[in-house]
Amino acid sequence: MRPFATVVTALCGLVLSSSAIVSADASSTSSKTLLPADFKPPQVFKNVNLVRNTNLEKGYARETVNVVVENVDKQPQSDYYLSFPSDTFDRVGGLEVRNKKEAEKGRFDVEAVEVDLARDVQYFVVHLPEPLAPSSQVTLGISYSLLNSLHPRPATIEQSDRQYLTYSFSAYVPSAYQTVTQKAKLKFPGTNVPDYTTTDLKSGQDPERQGSTYTYGPYNTADVAPGTSYPITVRYEFTKPVVTASLLERDLEVSHWGGNLATEERYWLHNNGSKLSNHFSRVDWTVANYQQSPSSAIRELRYPLKPGSVDPYFIDDIGNVSTSRYRPGLATREANLDFKPRFPIFGGWNYSFRIGWNNELSSFLRRAVSGADSYVLKVPFLEGPKMAEGVQYEKVVVRVILPEGARNVRYQTVEGPLSNGLPGASQIQSSLSTHKTFMDTLGRTTLTLTVESLTDEARDSQLVITYDHSLWDALRKPVAFTAGLLSVFAATWAIANIDVSIKKR
Ligand SMILES: *[C@@H]1O[C@H](CO)[C@@H](O)[C@H](O)[C@H]1NC(C)=O
Ligand SMILES: *[C@@H]1O[C@H](CO)[C@@H](O)[C@H](O)[C@H]1NC(C)=O
Ligand SMILES: *[C@@H]1O[C@H](CO)[C@@H](O)[C@H](O)[C@H]1NC(C)=O
Image (cartoon, rainbow, N blue to C red):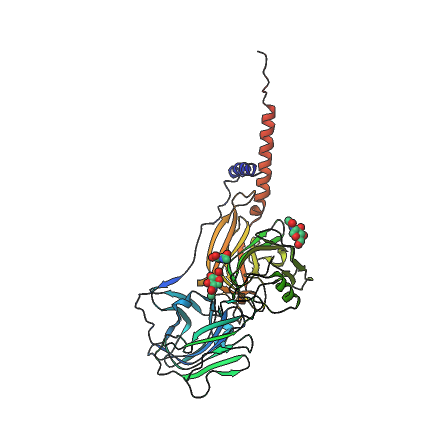
């Protein structure tokens, strides 16, 4: 079939050569400001009060920092530097900064700044929308996840053992500025916290414990030099898998003709939990499973799908996996795909698979009010399993494959009063290309968005894409197909009419 298609496409290329050219030049965005190696943020701010909340209930750490910032300079200032230790910087996911008191006004522009890689501190720069006047204050609400920040200790356990994770951080926030008072609050998944650092940085007990919440500080750190570190390590029970997708490729394919939105996702999963010290025992596993005991292995992935999702499939390296259960939702209720990998995935093990399904396009696409040939597509940026232990994604590549001839492609992510789990636009790389499939003449316009370091916090984030697509674009494929067939018929007819018989002269 392929050679035939190529011939047809080639023939039609001639027929259609006068049509408009798709603006499919690969544009690419990514911003990183370069700073000199000896760069130090100007000391124009001080942190009057800082509270850091660290949530350890999932397989990664999620932090929200609320900090009252004061301009201590004589000039208005608008660039606040947010520093992270170099070994943490690339693992910061879904960073978002807002004015805590006006959260509904949206996020601030945040840019990654590149200084000499050998340095032990790296920065993001937060651009305040309005410069802060001298002696004025603003309360920043900063939220992000720290991927790969939890380590199993012991690193190997027996199959039915409980699993423990460690988390290390500094009691003093690694800020670029002087911080007058600060504290760090940790929320554990439970009350089983066998080991934690105690300090004498303040009078009385440090940390203070209340159920599964431990509070370090408040400390008076006005005289502590910015960037001073005071290491703390905690170790707590987490008998759940530490689910990591080293890569997720997610394709959304829009078909105007079929009225269909096809989604396919390819996962490369890894469990970062404790490894097994002995061989896997199927018998013990069956017993544990029967008793519903908690386990550090991935035994099932629960995947809610949008209402109206149909034809789900789940295929791994070996083939079709039949141990999945699909509960279709009603018209408005979420559907659920619960799928069991072929074997439980213990710490250190990998599992790759792909899943896919279809939806009615009409639930996601509408014509823009502005023009008859403009469309607005609203789709989830990320879906993925929804589980108490969470999922961390080292890299996510979302490809939206639009109809052939789609032009003027623009995208944005939907922002609400709360964090959507995605980083700002400057941390999302985008490119436009064409993707040729069967019978395409020009190739289908494809928007590719790449984000490094993301978590399931971004599960409900929405992506809005607008594009133009005219009737002629819509007809191109059938016209191409018909023209192709006609030329084949004509050729067949011509060949049939060539008289190849050997005639008597
Ligand atoms: C977790 O697994 C991923 C994928 O194999 C790896 O890149 C990462 O470094 C691991 N994290 C830790 C903390 O070991
Ligand atoms: C895969 O399994 C599903 C049931 O889970 C079945 O309906 C489908 O036909 C199978 N597909 C293939 C290609 O075997
Ligand atoms: C798991 O996958 C990662 C890459 O994602 C690879 O580096 C590693 O070797 C794999 N581990 C095993 C045990 O196959």
